[in-house]
Amino acid sequence: MNMKKDVRSVRSALEYLDNKGEVIHVTKEVDPILEISGIQKALDGGPAILFEKIKGFPNFRNVGNILSRRETIADLYDEDDTKQLKFRFKDALNKPLPPKVVDEAPCQEVVITDNIDALATLPIIQHGPKDVGRILGGGINLLMGKFFGEGSNVSFNRTHFRGKDWASQSHAQITHIGMIMSKTNRDDRIPVTVNINPPLSVQMVAGAWNVRTLVPHGADELGIAGAFQRSPIEIVKAKTVDTYAIANSEIVLEGYYEPSSQNVWESDAAEELGKQTVLPFFPEWEGYLGRSWIVRKLQVTAITYRKDKPIFHTAMARGFEYAGYDILREAEIIEMADRLAPGILVDCFVPICMQWGGGMYLQFRKARPQEEGFQRNILMAALANCPGMRLVVGVDEDVDIYNADDIMWAIESRVDPDKDIMSLPRGQRGIAAQPMEVKERGVGGWEGGIAIDATKPFNDIWKFERGHYPSDMVDLKKWLTDEQIAKVQLQQSEYARLCSKRGW
Image (spheres, rainbow, N blue to C red):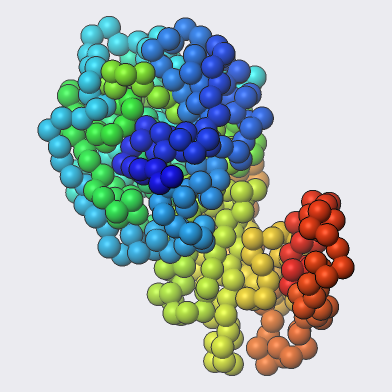
């Protein structure tokens, strides 16, 4: 049976997946303190999870893991092959579809402007046992107008409500929003909306940590999201501040970033100690326990949401939903490479263990001797264009970039340690969330990124012909039953299945 797809809202996307039996419903009561995150992490990388009954918040539901499988994303967006998602984003980069302003929006069916109490209103969770409190990790900040060069910027930013109507919000300085904060007039109040569960395409753009040379200040990031979903992202005028909200969000916080003179500590304990980067905050994207900083103050002027059981979003900073967030980043690296040397980079993959820009694998095609060396230009450009990236590995087309064992085999057998391991000079700007970051000139610096060229030298390519066994030339059904074959395949590792399929 053909089921209607509508990806213009998370609610309608969930309905489609639910009709296919691809949503886990948790109907027993769950506590937002540690239970939701514990259940979600235990099921990470699986189907979407919808928590139907949240302790203390009877009017709200909560969803997690909705973007944790690329197969699910491909299904939602009518792509037969998950690898096509990045090329769809590549097209969207070059042909953004501007957002559409609407007069009325689902996210504004309920409007609270008096006696605002965010922690009492919303089921914000405690992610880990050492968290400083209940942290909003799934809110997507939308900056528009003069504060983003008349474009639109969307980003996830960790938010801690230390007061009923105000919160700390962290902005890494090397991100778009961080640069905006540092470049604006010290006395500016910057209007912003924090959108919870906007369309999935917006979530993927917000989580991508965009390559600045491809998506610069003033770019239309909502336009990229709209082009990807092939319909404009609808926005609506905010109720209390001079900016816009994403119309099909489930929940929206409206407010201002207060002037930098009013910056706040992220936790009571850090403020009492008077030291940044020492005391815990919550589990962060790079896999370590994040630390508390002095950051911008978010003053909330309104909370708006859908009337019918609004759906909160529990995005985990270190979670498999980066399977969705990293797709656009891959597209941007392919676009960057095409501008340097068209056709040489054929694919790019960010493995989940190196999510949000920690590292990536690049697959190259060298067709003639004159193309030798361009792979190194692209490898080094990837490091330079992605501040904070620690590792980038380049391989040939005969290596499966989606299989870590095959990547390691290429490194072991094709790398000259004296010539093929490269790095950018220490001291360039990185991201201080990485524990290996060093202090350079008083700010978070960069311990260094590594580029590994594990491609075959073109003039000696004949030496690297892979040995071939005829496993891809025989039909096992001639000797074994389907049951026997299936049993063996279940016992094989992923790498064993790859090698047997290709005869390696």
